Every structure is written in structure tokens, then in C-alpha cells.
Image 1 (cartoon, one colour):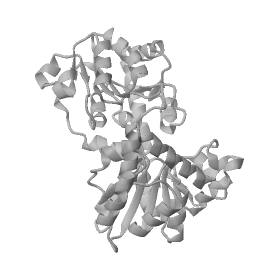
Image 2 (spheres, rainbow, N blue to C red):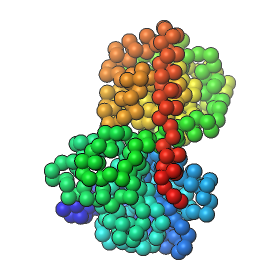
Image 3 (cartoon, rainbow, N blue to C red):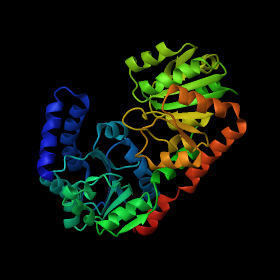
Image 4 (tube, one colour):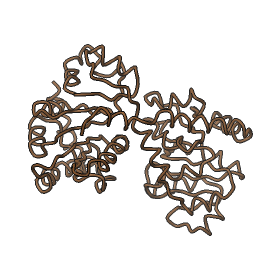
Length: 405
């Protein structure tokens, strides 16, 4: 049944590629994978394979890859992606020796891929449980690890009709899970090779904060003013944020939409009633005279949060929130929308007092006004956010203690 589903999915993506850009990129990338491996994967080169679905999972695997590179420069790193939103952004990642798409999980693709790469170890990040690839690795005697994985009782493995698919979990040599609930769920299936190590993303955001460079344009905009930094926003987020900003002339705003295109940038500009600049067009002088900076590129957000008095992480009124630890690591209160149930760090931060779920414009106004008018509450919330990140760091170290490279 699983194999049939994969073939049907493959057919659906091929059909979608006729009209959908992302599907077209995926199909083209799959064809390129075999050429990339043929040209660059050489025998006897000690490949360690990391597979990430998309950009978020890449960031979770990155601390392990970078430590592996530092401590074992003789190893070569293969990085694969499933989604174009990961591959197209990180295809030139210098920390890996080979970067490519992972072709669809068919028996033939899996055998061919493993035969060409011959990895010595494989790491699948978070939710990646590709049956045929993991089976092929197991048959080849390659140790397989799941990193920063998290399990919930509504996943297919724990449903009566999914117990057959759950057999793939027994092929892993070790699971490094985020919480105790995940270990208990796996134990119920007889999977005991499990360690609760937390999320490597905490290590990653600390690394990012420590390496973050000053951004003169953001510094010129903010000056001594209190500032909201809003990252990965969608229109429903902006419908809440921008009117609040328009009514508060004492505040500055830095806003980085999740999708950067002319339509989205125009939409933001039309809502703003105060002087605003696009980042690509700004100078330190013009930024100092503006009230809002619109980020019209990628790669800056993780450094921009350092300028925040309050941070807002988008996506919570849609498919789900984006990277909350990326903002919380700077020790600032973080706001986000209600679709955050699947994100452990968001729920934990709410409980700790470092984050706030908002469900409407009125809700955001009440919470933001309270923090901005009570300096003690603002400081305590920011302290709680930063402390939570520090307490949960260390997953990379725990994984390296367990895995012998």
C-alpha cells in the first residue's frame, strides 16, 4: 500500500509540474540528482548522509554537520532535501560536499541511491521516515539515526491501520527525540533505542546569535526607539501588526514577509501610514528618517531579531508558526498566532511566560500595550524567553556522545 501511494504521489507531482513552479523544480531536481551523484560521489570517501525535508529541518541538522566538519574533516557530508523550499535556498551550502534532492521513495530509487553513495551513516531529521530508503540502508548495514524527532499519538504509526508502516521505526539504530512523550509512544511499539536529547535547533539559534553581525540599516532605523521585529509574516499577521504600528508613532517596525515578491511588498506598503523603506533601497541616512523597514530579501531575519523590543513570528493564522527560538534566543518576548499546537517550543515558551499566543488584533493590542507600558513585565518576559533557550541547548553534544564517528 505504501509503495502504491508513493507511485501515485510521484504521478501527481509530475502532472502538477505542468503548471506549478515548485513541482517543476522538484522533478527537474530529481533528474539532476543522478548526474550530481555520478559526477561527485566517489568510492571510499566516507560519506555521512543528512536528509532534511526542507529549510527548518536543515537548520536542525546543521549543528551536527558543522561540528562533524570541525572534528572530523576527513569525513564527507552528503545533504539531501525533499522540498524545493529547502534545496533552492541551500543548494550552495558550503558545509556539505554534495547537496541534491532525494528522489521519490521507490524501491528502485532507494537501491540505486544507496549503491551510488555508499554512506557510512545516515541521519534523518525530525519527521523523515522514508520506508524504502531506510530499508535499503538497513540491508546495507548502514547505521540510521533520527534526530530531533517528535512523535504524537495521532501519527500514522500509532493508528491501528498504520502498524505495518510502523515497522520502519525498528530499522533505526537510535532515535534522538525532543521529549519524554515521544519516548513513551515509541516504547509502546517496542522501540527502545531512544534518548531524550531535545531539539538541535536550540543549539543552532545560539550559534546564530553568537555569530550575528550588526546590520547598520536596522540600527539606523531603530536608534533608541522601541521596535517590533516581525518575521515570516503572512497577510493575516500583517492585518494585526500594521494597524497597531500605524497607531503608535513612538514605535519602529521591521517586517520580513515569508514570501518576497512585488505583490506582497506592495500589499504591505499600501497598509502602512508612516514612512517606510525597502531594505534593498535604504541607506543609513534614509533609514534614520524612516519608521518602518521592509525586508525584501532573505537571510537577514535571524540577525534582525537582535533589534527587537517585541518579536512577532508569523504563520500562526495559517499552516503553522515559523521559527520561534530564532527570536526568543535574543531574550525578547515573542508573539504568534493560534496555530502553534504542533510546536513544543512555542507551548513551552507560553508556559514559561516568554511568549504569547494572540488570536485577534484586540488580543495583540492588549498584550503588547501591557508589556510596552510595564518595563518590569517586559524585562521578565524577555528573561524567560532567553532562559528557556539556554536550558534546552545541548542536543548536539548528547548526539555526539552517543554516535561514534
